[in-house]
Amino acid sequence: MKRQTVRLKTASVILALGMLLTACGPKPVTLGRYRAVADFQLTDRTGRPVNRKDLEGRIVVVDFFFASCAEQCLVLGQRMAEVHRLLGGADDVRLLSLTVDPRSDTPQALARYAPRFTDDTNRWWFVTGDKPALYDLIQQSFLLPAGEREDERANFSNGFIHSDKIALVDAHGVVRAYFDGLAGNTPQRIVEAIDKLRHEPQPN
Amino acid sequence: MFAQLATPLMKRLSLIFPLGLLLVCVSCGDKHAGPLAQAGTAVTNLHTYQVKGVIKKLPPDGKTVVIQHEEIPDYMSAMTMPFRVKDPNVLRGLQPGDAVSFRLRVTDDEGWIDAITRVAGAALAGQTAEPAASASVVAALNPGDLLPDFTFTNELGQTIHFSQFRGSALAFTFIFTRCPFPEFCPRMCKQFLAASQKLATMANAPTNWHLLTISFDPDHDTPPVLKAYAERYGYEPARWSFATTSAEDIARLAPLCDLMVRRDGESFMHNLRTVVVDTDGRVRRIFTDNAWAADELANEIVQAAAAPKAASP
Image (cartoon, rainbow over all chains, first blue to last red; front, side, top):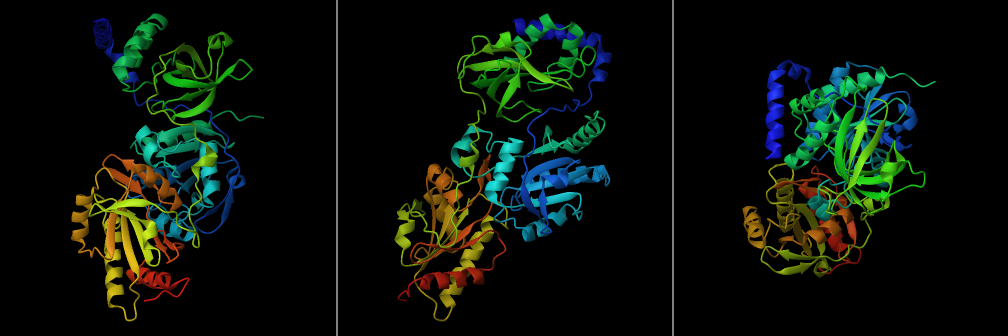
């Protein structure tokens, strides 16, 4: 009863002030402040060792995938590819795709997998390494628990991190936002967030 | 969920915020919990999210509280993390273990929580166990490791064990019968079929070998379903079994094989693992993809059937 009253009132006010509606575009991107990314020693698809220092001073867009994942990871990869395209070769941003299946995804396997999304080995890194180290990095720095639904966790999450989130790390190595990696508007939102980061006042 | 959440909130918000704000909030038509308010006028980009969680810790500083919270749609995954409070009084009377509902407020520069209220201690939607880093990676088997025994039900409804294949080479792989991708589960079956044909026709081939295709979808892949599936590949029951086991045992076996499986509605997201075990029950080879040739598997089986002791043909 009360609920309906509230809704009716709200609806009529909305109608009366319809012009306010135009103010509502897509939700603005908000930046939070999560964990600082821990140091890591991993290997990219060219066999080059990579660590956190290589990313210092750069904004980093991070996703988590495995090459034999048929559906979701491909969508995720396409979203990352769109971010890469929208950035137009900007050098202050790196894309980092971390495999969660390192035994399958050796540097050689990644070298076969990555070209469907990009030939750019400088700005978009597909990275693998020791599984405990990778999983520690993902859990400790990105805080993305494995299954997010109880049924999955109960049955199959053991030993398998999967997340379709994309994380955004600022130039100081702090995770600042998460995005739904499967949503179509995510690339635009990420680029918007990157722009916000670029215009943040710098400490010191 | 939205209706339950939204109604008391709308009431509360209508008391707290000017009507115009409420209007903006409602007209944005966000179907989830947040952002409930976009106070672009008064405060810099204030976003408010209504969140549920369980208090894990109340650090002695009196200014923070560690809460295991459920997913905040469009903002944050379910996780356990510390939240700052502006007014220490809002923490009064709270204890670890309390199920709470609270308001997360975020601007461009800061984030804090307030309006913490205890709620009936029901389990959270999508509640996550606290991620324990050490528990996440079970040491997977490597070549030379002894395969622990597991029990399965095969396509004929019979109980079978890994250990009953001691003395033979065993190759097993993982599938679910509803897998639609030709390059994944169906390919594993085609390769098994091709390898078995190769072994049947190979000169001096051993006879002590068996193939086992394990489904990680026990809910759907009952023995009759597995049998019908096996028959599509013209399997020979004496040489090739199709089996499954409890979800609990699959959850134990999968990490041992570095198999990754996640249910996704009626489908599964998974990687591929094919394991060849020798006559002593030790892992000989693990294929980690779909690129191996049937001949390669057949050769591994020949080696595994002989090693480490000279097996009698």
